[in-house]
Length: 265
Ligand code: NAP
Ligand code: MN
Image (cartoon, rainbow, N blue to C red):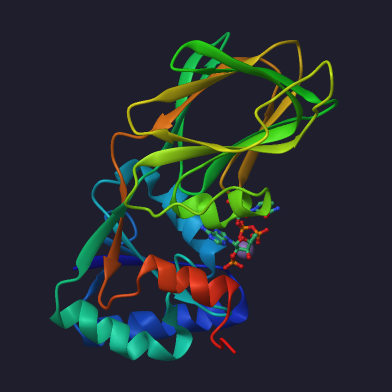
């Protein structure tokens, strides 16, 4: 099995990476930075986002595994002191592959179309002023948005930024995208829905820039500023990201452990 390790770059993650390579060599796993089948992320959920974007061009050929160096993560469920067990399981057993939906974002600009993927979410905000954007769902006008921004999240990203803006948590088996508002302006003149909406896999929405405005776009942890965006089409991507599971850790258990804690009194 070919593998690569992506780490957060801090001392502990770098040490763990070295240790992983030693254990992997002893167990017959091959390090291959260009054509890995397994991508091991060592750090946090943010590190897994980096790993995802590093290998996004091979997304249908790789599976991800997350090791966390701090708190339990949504993508990082192995602990630092479990590396030996992880490597042994990688060498000896076949994992269950779980597949999570991705967001596909198509930018329509004067230079043409370009497409990007997000594992957590895509966001759009105004750089200089309030964002003004028309939102169409399935090519029909839905609303005119004025406010700080819009979060378009995947189910696995629903526990991240989406949750902070009041969006619902969606199980990753539900192929969908959630649109959530960031501080929309609502008064007698301007009106938005106010609650978040969940689109099924066969729907799409367009965010149409209604004036010349600089937009800040984020794709997970990556962000860019553009002033030439005409519209942005958001839909569920036609392929998924794979995670290798050597032991079960149900999504709702992750949610409980991340947000509620272990003790229920
Ligand atoms: P960061 O600012 O270090 O991350 C923010 C937090 O989100 C970290 O605690 C991170 O966990 C956690 N996180 C990442 N993906 C998650 C997921 N799917 N479910 C639950 N928590 C998750 O930046 P980063 O590490 O590069 O992560 C980028 C992400 O930060 C973005 O995709 C966005 O979701 C999130 N973000 C949130 C807000 C907000 O809530 N107001 C604002 C901006 C960005 P780790 O510590 O394990 O990395
Ligand atoms: Mn982080």
